[in-house]
Length: 209
Image (cartoon, rainbow, N blue to C red; front, top):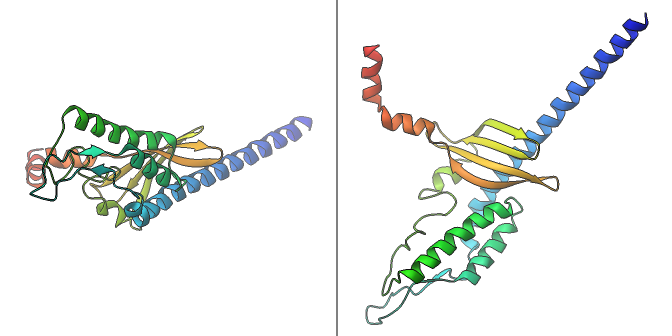
């Protein structure tokens, strides 16, 4: 009889523990999803207002004026990063990655000056977060789907698919109870397969099997 009671208690304990773990996992995943979606919406609305002062100066818009030199205004970069941090969705690691890009461009312009120029700045030709076509992500947030979420302690890897060939990867860290984004990139697996085997070649390959 005692064995039955102990067994009953053990089964109930394990059931409660399992339920508690599942509940915590659901809550964690929901927090992660909210952070990603809220960040995307925030960036879509505020990306054009983050740069309060010109980050790059020295453009030559006057054909008469000469000897203008392109420069990166690092204090303006720091203000840009402060404004970015106010979103409360990104980590110091994320901000440091952006800072390093601007610093690299600045160092390169000092080493190899560009004068009397008006056009895209080498290294800053596109949106630093989402690339050349940010609208491909920011314009389809509602239709995006979370396909994978992996968590280990205070780290997470998240896959957010906009389409079959437009799939986003986020890495995140939990800091003081809040999930923050460390990195954003793209999963090019399906795109690489598509480029390697375009539709007509895939059809031929299938017929050959």
